[in-house]
Length: 419
Image (cartoon, rainbow, N blue to C red; front, top):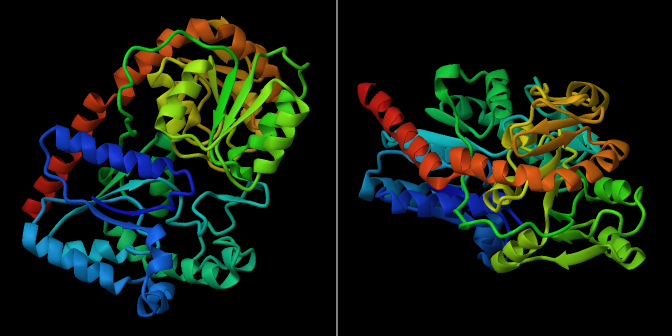
């Protein structure tokens, strides 16, 4: 299991999923060899290692040496790659293939094409680099770490490794939207498997609390400013309490809202116990993404705790909550999304612009649409809570998802053996 961990100061659902996946596979009797690097290692690296950092996304020689040694010693049946940047590099795919080990990658973002990985720039969805041999727009707009030099390096890395990515033996697409993204990139259907993530079962759900919980990185693409705008359109106290957990560049907006209104509470960055307490204190979890968020872990955590979700109709959010809104093509604008979800579904009338799903509601990523959905979600929370838990048990429980993952490994190993 190969993964470059994101900095611990930056909340990462991907880190959480990798840790959980290793534990779930181990519990199922699979021998897992973690090949983990962390971006937190960078400040303590030697001068020589730091000098090599600029080429690490392309090659990462130390990682290839260490991986070769691990593969030679243990001869694993498969290499499962999550995030390769910056300390592993996509070159680990070539290293594994050189040792005769097939590779599966879980796709958590759009970084086969987009240097930032999220198809989002300057407050709006952006796909300017799609279909280009070199992502020149990413360099022009400093899309990677707000640096022209680092953006040029990442754009070059994506160009160099186009063939590497197309040699991966199996791709795990977390949703149907990611499967479409991979097909558009040129990956054939037979190498794509749609399999969501799982989170550990927290046990029998506690009774619903009151109000709403928003739990995410406080950054523009995660939509906390959209949520605060929608919240302010209701009188103080009309919707119960809005709890906000997380940290990031927009923290000051949340802190100001908490000072301005007694029905907004800023919880800061939470540990696992704090997350569980915050979920139990709330009735509905909000995911206000402004980008095509692939698979927000917080939605699965909410359903596991029997909490329905109110989300924007982007990326994998409708898929996760079983919304009736049709899957939107990447780049669809708010007006089209509003039209797609208008009238709801599921046999229950909804106000225009609100889509009803098995475990929650979806709306266009606009303040007015989200504001209109807030009282609907509050009123309907108790009715959807059992269905949210049932959807988790049926689709996102570790017992279900781990079996699917083992089947992926087995099928890939059979194909590699025949070759």
